Length: 409
Image (cartoon, rainbow, N blue to C red; front, side, top):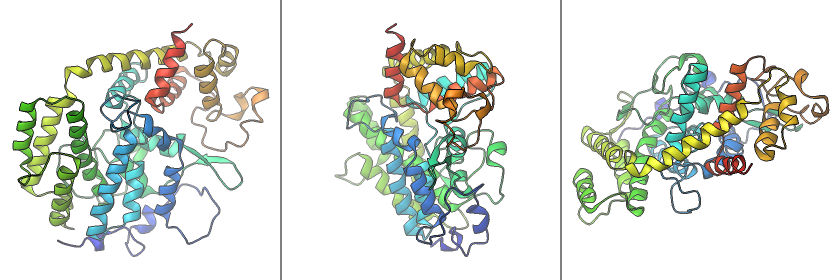
């Protein structure tokens, strides 16, 4: 087992200054108690986007069950796996944990089904795709807000290394070896498709591979508990996994074997990687999951349900666009759908220029000194983007409750 300590992102690393760079400062705090990456970790931990992950679907929609994996549980699995690997390889554990906790901030409600529905709407109305890695960076850079010591709300302003880890984490890319890229890029402009670039840090590469091994094992466990797999399927899976005699197929056994393999085979020359044998096994497990779980007809009703909810919320909010009078129009019609319109109105007010706020609202939003991404709502495309941002941040439960409000009237 080779130590990768020479590649760790620590103060002696030649790229350290570039990788801890922030756009601005959130707190005027000169304390040396926490490193830049520890600060990023707690900023994400305190964010509302992170809190909402507990009510977002991972794979199986079951908002009322305490025993089905949610998006937050998945994130914690990835953090645990990543931390173990980083610690064993001598990498920066603080950076690894910060990337891991932040990596899925951009996930839509209803899992990847919701992601596809929002992407379809974005393609139709904005001629662009929606993908959760890009949305995660967008949320970290522009949507999520925290109060500073003067109680003024600002953007998170995460370090470059953590922001890079968020947008480059794509676990759906079918590779079992991840070597960091060498060049700094404009993450918002240059990263135009999921998986286009590898992370710039070994720590980011750890999270990218940990994401994949974390979800395949946990998804199998849920599928077994929910009866998605037949006895024949289980026998097929056992032949693929080939665990030691007496070992059961569950999250721990699948993840444990792969963690050990990554720690044994990773190096500065090869990057973070699995052995060829274990890498092929992971690819086969992933293919099994897609065939037997993710493509199951049992998801058809859930897909249609998700599509109905997201599209109806989008179309309802779209009706209220009226240029720079949009805020006024929303406020005048808040009694139609008190929860949806009231909360969307409040959301918009945080991200538009103060000059278009209604006079009576200016005092309530004067402490929001964040980037005003929706400007003056000067065109319909900006308003559509605002709707999609708002929907993508919803939990499954909130989206369902909002839809229920729509059908009551």
